[in-house]
Length: 203
Image 1: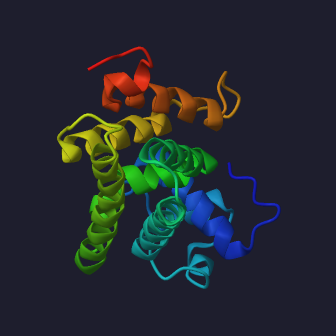
Image 2: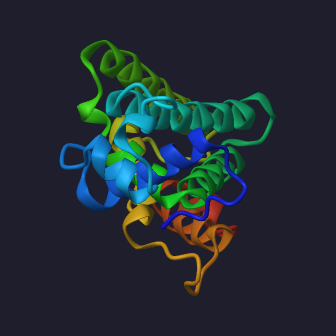
C-alpha cells in the first residue's frame, strides 16, 4: 500500500483512496474499503473526510491546479513556441509521473464528480487545453510550425502524454525527462516547418 510514514492522517486517507480508485475504480470503491486499507474503523474515517465525493474533488482539483500553474509558468516566460511546447510537455510528464495513482484518478474518474464540481472542473480542463492552443497558434504565427488544426494537434499531444499513466513505472528504462524528450521530438517532427528542421531547405 501507500508509504504513509511522513503524511498527515488526512493525506494518508487521500493517498490510499487514490490507490484504490485506480485499482478498483471510483464507483466500486467504498468508504469502508478505504477505512479497511488504513486499518481504521469506518466511523473514524469521517473525522478526516466527509465523503468519497470530497476525496475525488480534492484529487481532481489539486491535480488541475498543478497543470495550470505549470502551463502558466511556461507562457509567462519568453521562449519561442517550440521551446515553450517542449517545456509544457516536460511539465505535464513530470506531474503525471509524480503520483501515478492520483494522475489515474484525475484522468479516468473526473466524470464522476458532482454536477457543480464537474462544470468547474471542465472549465479548468478547457483552459489548460487553450493554453496549449495558444502555443501552437503562436508557433504558426512565428513561421515555426506548419498550419495545422490546432484543436486536433492539442488533443493529440495531450492524449500522448496522458497515456504515460498507463505504462510508466519508476523503475523503468526511461525517466520522465527522457520520456518528455522523446514525445517532444515526435511532436515536433509533425509540427515543425521543413525549413526549420532542415537548414539546407530552400523554398
